[in-house]
Length: 287
Image 1 (cartoon, one colour):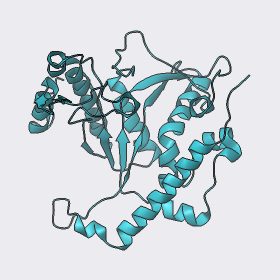
Image 2: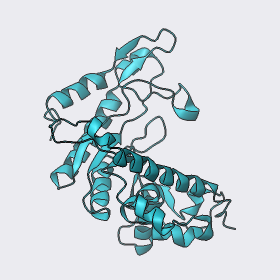
Image 3: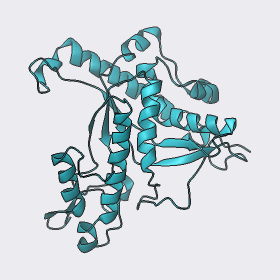
C-alpha cells in the first residue's frame, strides 16, 4: 500500500518559517534597516530576500505528460514550497491537492505580508535528476513519498561524494524555470558546490573534480544570464571545509582545505580556479 501520509509536521514547520520570514522583512523595511546597508552606488539601499534549495528535474520521457507533471511536481515540492507563497500568494497547487489538510492555510492578512516579502530569490543548487511517475506505490513515507515521483539519472552522469548527480545543464534550466514561474525576479545563486573524494590532504588540494564541477555549473548559470535571466550574483559553497550536518567532518565542500587538528588552511586547485574566474569575470571559462 502507499505510504504517503504522516503527521504533516514538516509542513507546519515550513509554514511558520515563512510567517517568521514575513515578520522579519516587515521589521527590516518599517524600521529602515535597508538604509544601513549601502550596496555600492550612493542611492542603492540594502536588499532582503530568502534562500531556498532547489534541484532541477527533467522529465524522464519528455513526450510523457505523466513524466512532465512529475518533474513539475517534484520542483514544486522542493523549490516551490518555500518560494510560491512569497511570489504567487500560496503553496503550489500540487501540494494542496496531495497534502490536503496536512498543509496549513494562510489567512488573508498573512498572504498580504508574505507576497512581495523578498527583494530577491536566493537559490541553493547542487544537482539535477530525471523525474517520472512511479510505477508502484512507495514503500516509505514522509516528505519524499508525498511527491509521488520516482527520481533517476543517466549512467553517464558523474556523482559527488554525497551521491548527487553532476548535471551542469540543470544550472541553466532551473534558472529559466524560476524566471518564467516568478515573472523575472532578481536571483542570486547563494550556494553551489560539491563534496569530492578527499581521503587525505594530497587528494584534497588537487581537487580536479571540483574544478570541473564549478566550471560546468558557472557556465550553465552564465548561459541562463545570457538568455535574459536576472542573475545578480553567484556564491560557491564553500570557502572552507566545514561541519556538514549529519555527516560531520567526513564530507568536504571547501575550496580551501582545513586540517581539523591544527586548523591550518591550504587553498585547493579549485580556489586558484575560482579566483581566476572572479578576476576575469568568467573569461577563463572554456567555450
